[in-house]
Length: 284
Image (cartoon, rainbow, N blue to C red; front, side):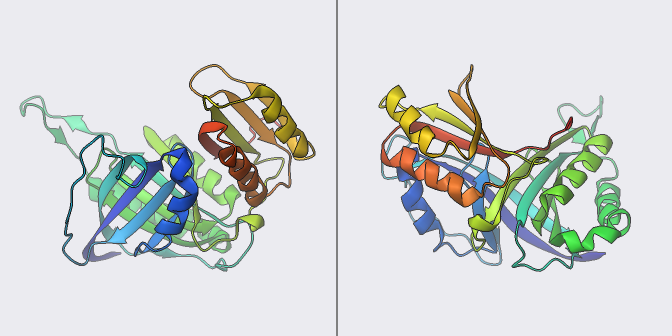
């Protein structure tokens, strides 16, 4: 199972909403092992294999507007330790989505060593995760293309990258890991080479949009825009908290159609933030 240690980086990026469309074109030029559009609080994710020195040739002041429209980034230093689990799913198959699962392994704090966390059997935990996919999920190899295992040097301990899988499979994994470990954090993302018109919602897995409106928001204009998508929208709710509206989309809508709706909102400067989620219904 073990292999040569290979360093990677994983970076989540959040952009200003007015630069989001242009950034998607810029990110397509980034040299990486894998990248895609995130469903959640971030906009994009990028994996890079660190096989050469990183050169930083310029710095921008914190309040400089030339920082490519970035709000913030979260970066993780990763080390690949184990071989990948190879699935049998075709990379061009419809309704394929990717996911990163960050797993926090329990630690014991040594009372005699001040302010230091002591990891117990971390390699054993990696092997147990590897065995889970190689043995317990062996019959589901047709549900995913590839699974990578990383040790993180960041706030999470182990990171699993599931490349192009069914939504059902990712939720199955999420539930299995949730029962075993104290904390997990799952992020869906769409690979840059995937056609979003082939990713479609279902009754069991609805697509949901969360909107934070801008100062240019006009209620009547927003209602008129939503009416154009009335056949695709199941419900619109006014929220409390940071986000203003929640839209639950009907079954069989594609992510591509939802992104067109987002583009119209952004073109009319109506939103300050947009987040998308794919949920799983527990009570049908």
